[in-house]
Image (cartoon, rainbow, N blue to C red; front, side, top):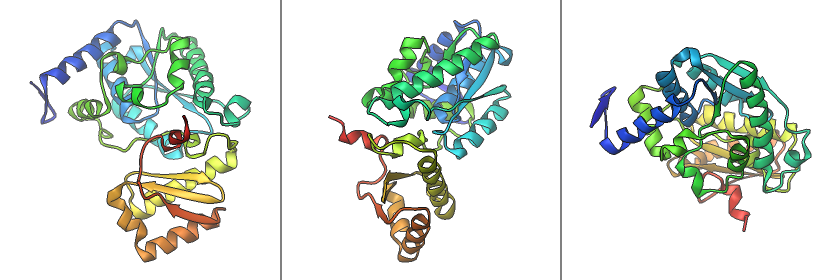
Length: 280
């Protein structure tokens, strides 16, 4: 058993953590595709441990699909780890294969994003780009993983056999402040396939979710945009708070002021990738 930060790690998980360090140590230098979530944070921290901070950097893609909260969180974690962060601005909406929002949208988006990050990383002398996919991603529809593989973007967490809860445990033992933060996802995942993506709809969704998080202290929330309907997903433990008569009225007023005509709550609660449930 391995102990660190008062957290006891099972030997099997310690072995996976060691395997992750071995994979990262095999690179001369590494650029981490960095969102600030727990997956990419553990990846960045372990890369810095394995290679030294002078051979590692966090590369964050700033596009229309990234929630504002995630941008701030990525900068904060990079500062905590004392690893330089490189911000790469790009626009994906001009690409019709992304903005038309087909079921394989994520493939086209990730290919564009990873291509930009690779170019930026190579320009700064980094020999490899890695990203935070893990074994749990195999259980959902993830066409973006195909784009990563085609471009040679490695997934060390996946290669080490690490799943989400194991990543959280290792992040906690490493002392990462976001080890138990809820998962985020690109804003396009709130819009049904086939409904075009626009800057206005993405900004509206981002603002609605930030309102719900900050006003009611919701740990996990999604606002799925079925315009003119807003469908709120939150954890079961938070449903009573959202459905309180006063809170419900405030949420209804606020989201209608943003442009929706009807506001509903999904009785099944939050679940990652719920828009994929419509796919065969």
